[in-house]
Amino acid sequence: MTEPSIFTRILDGEIPAEILAETDRLFALRDIAPQAPVHLLVIPKTAEYRTVAELAAGDPALLAEMIAFAAELAAANTHDGDFRLVFNSGPNAGQTVFHVHAHVLAGGLTEKSVGA
Ligand code: AMP
Image (cartoon, rainbow, N blue to C red; front, side, top):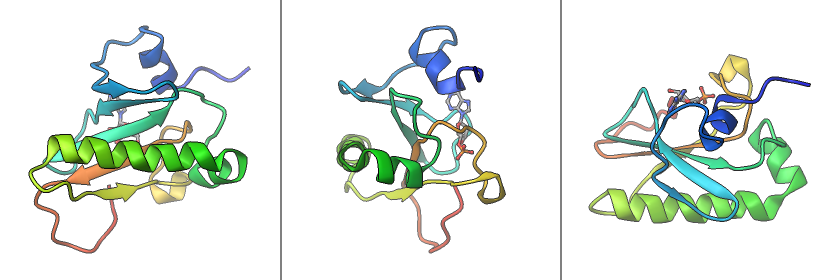
């Protein structure tokens, strides 16, 4: 058994955090270390998928739900609804939590770089 991820522990109420919004299969948090004026995380409730590639292969409909939810959150949290979606995939790409999640970044983003 691997340890539950920090996101599972938040979802289970073991670690305090404000869940901004949720659906039956997803929830959203504010990133604790924001890299943009708006920096939200969209997270599947299941911890079954570690990376976005695993999710795309295993449950593409859930990946599509993540993107639609990200768009709804951006619409609710920005004046224009524009957002950048980042999935860090693998430790050498900056992934630190191996429970797939999307970074939703918005506000004052003018560079083309994708670092979250
Ligand atoms: P990644 O590095 O792509 O795996 O993203 C993990 C993200 O989770 C980082 O941006 C962290 O700042 C964020 N994070 C870690 N712990 C928490 C927490 N307790 N609440 C909200 N965000 C967190």
